Image (cartoon, rainbow over all chains, first blue to last red; front, side):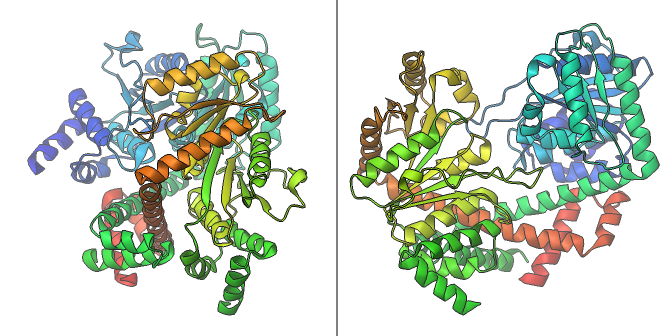
Length: 318
Length: 318
């Protein structure tokens, strides 16, 4: 097993596409090899820039991603696209995106495209996505675009956990209140009004600008610009890329790049450690039917039961 | 402090309304007194029936709740309504419902109405709601109706963690696909098509019946009925109550009532224990700036950092 992982680490570091794909599958599955993989790759990470795209279905995120890929490839930057399809917590199934999309770039060795779902990863997308990003990072990718399918809580978390987060709306999508409700106003570094040739684009842009003025941005020193694009024609995509670059410069100049990355890593470690203990607690509950019995007989209340469990797991593992 | 909590336990057990209100506020705040409160009340719980109502805003959940209160009060059952307003994870603010609603029942001593948000409870609504339900249960309430404001993930969890869960839709609300997407099909014990006098009610009911036939119910021995109501006129509410009673009999006869309650309690204990450890891990991260530094310098990868943290916290607390 160790040899297999060492081999996989080497293949990822050399940029081998099948190795990268295999490593990301391990992340999706929450495979036991992840720990050794992470240990082998981590020292080679921290170089890739990450950009998240989120917004409701139908606003044109995929087309916009494709246009961004085209733009950065023109600048000789290698790019990976991670399309995040969260697993429904109820059905256990994944709404897998079309892995064949963006065929324009399918034969370009500088572009890596991957749809991703969590099949077995206990920490869900919040842990799986940054792990996958680090694999692409270690493989030497300059830019990782993380595109979410929808705009649920998990997807907002995933798209927000990047250096620069784009929130995409389209004129038909709805009003400012809906953006606010979705909880995505606060994670935007750049707003994109896509399908800007449609009626209502100006109004959507003005509403977003008003909301930005009213506050709630995540970085007090950065006012999220509102960029209008038409992903279908490519119009405005250069402006969007300029806005992304401007934000990148801002992050570097203020030290926020390093600060934010460090905060995200610590949050990830916290989730990872907590997840570990949760597994132990779950195992302890399974192994102790008597505790369940005592709770059901109202002899032990939930708080006391939790304390007893923790004492038990720590005695075993500490 | 202990004396205060003992006094509060007595007041809750005697059904004192201000005592109950105070106890639920402690739950909202995640107050340190919760542990002693839980220990004092737990032996007196397990008697109340719980019914959850969930569905999109505007389908008429509040009116339906009011009608159900009217119906059960006619049967001399004491009832409490918990209206759950989840705190936005981004703003920290709560969309507090109108605590003055249902004024018809405001002077009825057999009815207790409370809007609830989580202000400081670290486990969020998933832990706060069952705690609040147990307070009402210990106070001698026969029936606790848990109504959610919207239909997000957290609210589905809360409404689903009751003996009988009603999923409410209205004809204008949308099609079956939307119900499926919201992840609420699987938690329904009874479907309610409210505003059944409107156009499209028959179609909505048929779509739901089809979806029920296609499977995905949470209890293989129970086929969720689809009941049509008009909360505005009260039409169909008696049928709805009959469906709730039928489900209650089913739960008792099959032993599912006890089985489900036990599973929910264990899940709660698991969350509680995990939350405890998460707090400890968080404190350990805060207390160890050197670890953050080593992660940032790429000397320690997230998995190893998590393992180191757990060793540290267990050595301190074990």
